[in-house]
Amino acid sequence: PVGLSYVNALVIQYLGTPFFIWYPQILFLVMLFLIYILYKNIYIPLLLFFCTPLFFIFTTFTDVALNIFFYSFIFVFLHLKERLKDYQIIILGMITGLNLFFRYEGGIFIGLLLFLLILFDKGNRKRYLLYLLGFLITTMIFFIVNISYYGSLLGNRFDFNRKFILNWDIRYRLEVLRGNLWGIEIHPIGYFKYMPYFLVIYVVLWLDRKRYLMIERVMYVAVMLSMIVILFLSPNDANVDYGTRYLSVLIIPSIFLLKRSMEERRSKVYRVIIILLLLISFNYSLKYARILIKVNQEGQQLYHSIKEDFRKDTLWIFFNHYWPAHLGTYIYDNKVVVVKTLKSSKTFIEMVEKKNLLRKYNKILIFSFNMNLEEFPKFIYNIYSEFPKLKYYILEHFKKSSKNYDFIKFQHRHNLEIEFHYFSID
Image: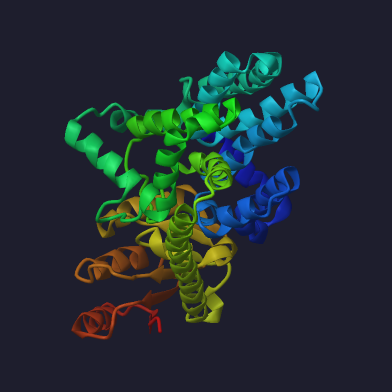
């Protein structure tokens, strides 16, 4: 979405690349602090941090981080609505509407929640309408920007996913539902598998619905309806191993409902069940924390295995998107190019010449990890033949084998002045 590009560009330009890596996590902590200040309850932010995938989703998907951050302002409004002036309510609605510039799921929940509140909470109907007015103002700006940039109301994200969203093949749709709600083989941890306590809470809330205030019942219905709508519009299973980013907008209201359910149900058995299920979620969080730590350690090892001359002001070539993510802020000291196929050396050379990349960079570092070495030498030879005066350094992740030495023989045969280094992760 266009909003993500602008925010990222502003952050990198004015706050620097190190802050770019950290600002989604900072937004997450600011959101938790805001929730704590407003609701004076330490358990809500603690549960959101330790027993949901939100921290990892914020870390991995910046668009989701910004979406949930701005969307969470609806809870500021709901808590303060009777103390706010009319113009303040409109401004809060406009701030909340900014979530649409990053993802659509928050808008689905907000739209359904406001519709139900306007319908059933007649005493605060004016406040809800003012808030809706602010939200619609931002929504209109969102539509105008999309038409200006992409020629469509919903923009490029919807256009890209249209064929998947509108795919009503029953087997495909069931696979999407299963992946999001529970998980599939490739992405095994879905919404309820990561947070099984929600499954219990949703059932118990329905059984106890008469005990709750009208606004709590409305929020519960909005969560359930939003889940149905989001799942049937999801283009895929969200492609992550923790929770699902498509349903992540339902986590905060569901945690609020969990708190109320624990207050209403005094049964020790019920509380023990919920605590045990929370521990399952906490265990998943620990596992993913260890994965993040491991990825960071691998990135450090990878960076320090690079010859010092090639760590900055170098054209770095990768053959997939996996390894650049390991290198964190180090990639911002260089120009990074991801080549999709080894057969595209001609396309790569044309792109380098067109963009004049080598005017600034006279060194090339090639990360040849997991590549087919039968095609790899030819790719290198074509590039070397076109730019023979550059300094070349190849970093290889394979274990030493005859295939590695095949490249070395190729190198000597064609008299290629290329340094070759074997990299191994501990």
